[in-house]
Length: 201
Image (cartoon, rainbow, N blue to C red; front, side, top):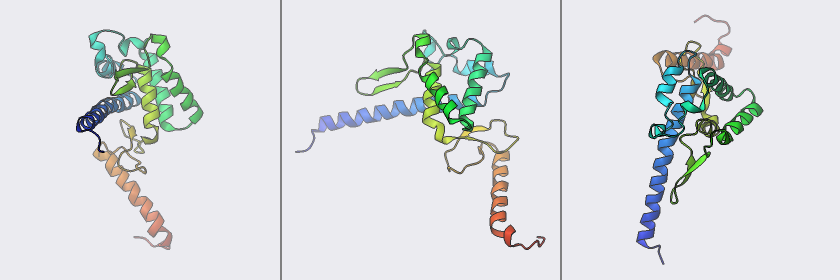
């Protein structure tokens, strides 16, 4: 006997709602990490203007916003450097320790790491806990993290979406053109250069 229609509709609506929350917070979290990784030394004011209230601007309703969880601009820049080390994947043990410390930072601010969205939807990383958002995002997105190979890129820290072999961010024409030149150089070296016999072209 098939499942009752009303229960099936409820299950479908629950899945849609969960997907909506995950997508909304996930997109904001990705943007937060990219902004912090690419943050310039003199851009802390801009960062706090955008992210100070919290992931969903929830801090504007009161409570402990992102801004109040960081003592000063130097502490924010220190967090940026820790995130950049994770992004560059040079020391996996350090990266794991950093993510672990961020995810366990809630006790310092009396903020739980996760909040119950609803009984039907389940739990979500606390949108007001800055370090938990960084830790959850870093663990969630580590496999996509990359650094643009264009040496003049202004925002070199990016997330790969199109191709796991992606070597440039592709955000500007300059970066795209740099990537295309590098692909052509690699192709020539592997397919023509080795057989060119020193002939000029």
